[in-house]
Image (cartoon, rainbow, N blue to C red; front, side, top):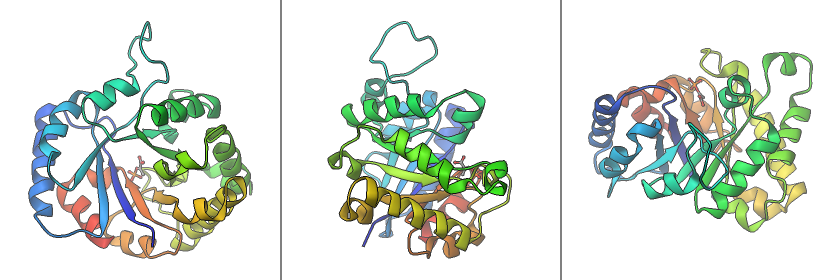
Length: 251
Ligand code: PEP
């Protein structure tokens, strides 16, 4: 049985007091109930350090939304893997479609970031997904195959147990349009098959593959009950403690 992982991508939302407030609500709402899933929150950089103190000794783990692959130096505006580690991050989202489309990140850059995250002891949540035009052009699988093959280049089978892949169809992110459970399951099964051919069946079987794209309390259960969907990466619905908790409970 693979574990389920629910991660919240806050994006560019919540200043420090707002972050404190949301985390406090989330932690008290989750209470001491035993969960069947791992829970991760990914607040913006300025809130990470405080978030780390607030989630200490709770079930909630901490992730960042991005990082650069160099160790240090003249890279204005960037943060390094070791900076994220030093403030208590365990995970880092890499290759999010907003990074790819708005900030021009390509597969090669994402591959460098994934490798750096791994050698620095961070666990990447590696996002892939097709645009609407690509889906309508029937090239979804080619796109996913390219993103995964390039993104995971030179990454060993051993390291694969520290990677989560998030399948996030771009047309479903922040649009309210969710992939149907069948559409998502088809791509998740394809990704698992691809990992099996790139690595081995056992690597593929233990890989956590999250679905992301307008996951809400009312569609989470059905999506999460698909055989190859092992959790979700949640954007909009993680900004309210109640709706994020409902999704966590659905898992
Ligand atoms: C995301 O940004 O990763 C995401 C899935 O956003 P939303 O849930 O708002 O579609």
